[in-house]
Amino acid sequence: MRAIYLENINSPFVLIEKEKPTPGPGEALVQVKAAALNHRDVWIQYGRYFTKEYPAILGSDGAGVVTEVGEGVDASWIGQEVVLDPSTDWGDNPRAHSKEYKVLGMPQDGTFAEYVKVLASNLHRKPEHLSFEEAAALPLAGVTAFRAMFTKCGLQAGERVLVTGAGGGVALLAVQFAVAAGAEVWVTSGSDEKIEKAKALGATGGINYKQENWGKELKVKAGGFDVSIDGAAGEGFVQLVKLANPGGRIGIYGGTTGMIGQINPAEVFWKQLAIHGSTMGTNEDFRLMMEFVREKQVKPVVDIVFPLEETEQAMRYMEAGKQFGKIVVKVS
Image 1: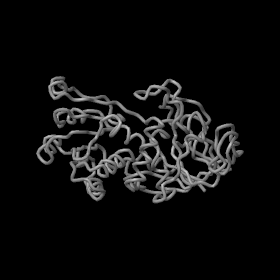
Image 2 (image 1 turned 90 degrees about the vertical axis):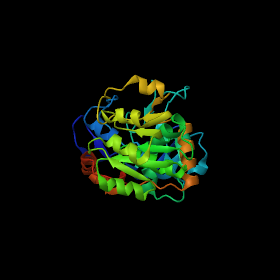
Image 3 (image 1 turned 60 degrees about the vertical axis):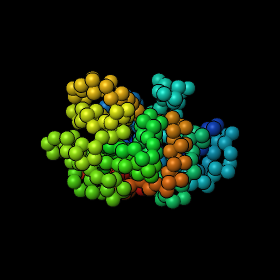
């Protein structure tokens, strides 16, 4: 089979031929039709991820067709179009993952290959309204957005939501999920064009965080927020605390702009705020996310599709940060 290979830290992604894997007991073999990129893949390439096991075949997101099953797996899965839940070994505590928790694509071989073997319990039937490319864009970003917004922050219909960094995969799915749930959604972005695109997805409005006093300006435009979903942290996080309504919840799933600035603790305790750290999600979060996508007919935004052999170019495109939505590689 063809696969994308990362030999070591700071090596380029290269196309190789590799033996097709064989499913063991409880496993299924999936012919990957499409896989999506995540910033996790670039961090692994640069050696900035907590797991470092090289060489590797990366890729956490994938959709395809089951071709073989191992012992103990229902044979009716063969021929089914599926989406892969990339999480294993979360553990018994739904509030936080265990030390054994793993995400597909390191240390286990991932979806940047024509075939991947996974636990059959991690297979989910592909929603019929999604193409393979759209379905591949869903898993990691989808479960991250869903857990932060619903499991952790408990978003309810009619509440006002702020999603930062509209343009990234998690942020856009957070926008789409919140709109589908009946919330009023606002966004921030460093691009006016991306704000307009978010409005086309159902957002009410937005603010460019590059402008001076963007927090005060947004307060005038929108008022306060019941829920904020953030993947940036940094100095901008202070504004989320200021913008929060009494009883507000802030979900943070990333920290692309670095350490959080100085927060007035009185604003947190006097407004009875809850700040929730969140990353990925349990298998139950994933199941509920898939049900929500199917019920609400949510379609992830795909920015661009590369052929498998151009995965290295796709990574550099993602690193440039110009995308609006997910970057996908067409595998087979």
